[in-house]
Amino acid sequence: MAQPVVDAGVLSLFLGGLVLAAFWIGGDPRGGIQGFAVLAGVGLIFLLGSRSETLRGLGGPGRDERWLMIDVWATAFAGLVLITVLIGAWLVEIARGEDGSPYALLGAVAGIAYVLAVAYLRFRR
Image (tube, rainbow, N blue to C red; front, side, top):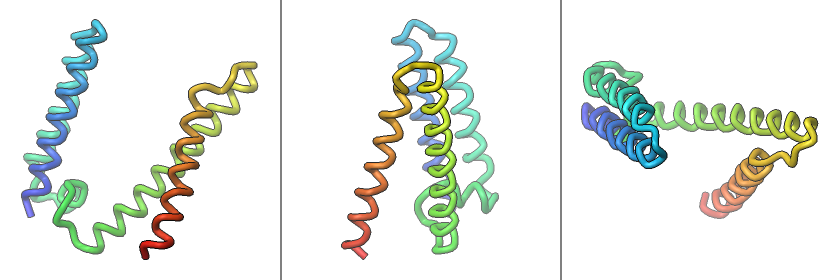
């Protein structure tokens, strides 16, 4: 069961490398190093915390049905929070006389993705 934890640790290092590269290209190597350090720390937590059931559950493949359901509920909750924040930010932007960008676009993408997922899962299951 330790393999998923290693995968999450390696993924954290990979994402840290992407953050470092993006900041470096943008002219802020210090920000990139800080971002890499944070994600490397997250990766280290996953690598060293292999005995934690929670970290193993977050780690990815190889989880049982219980963890799959926890993941589905957590993903749905995170999506609900994000969409609520997007709608709130969009309302603030239009109340300030702005055009609502980029919140309108992000909200539209979320709505379209939801409708497509419902349609796909309806016929798949």
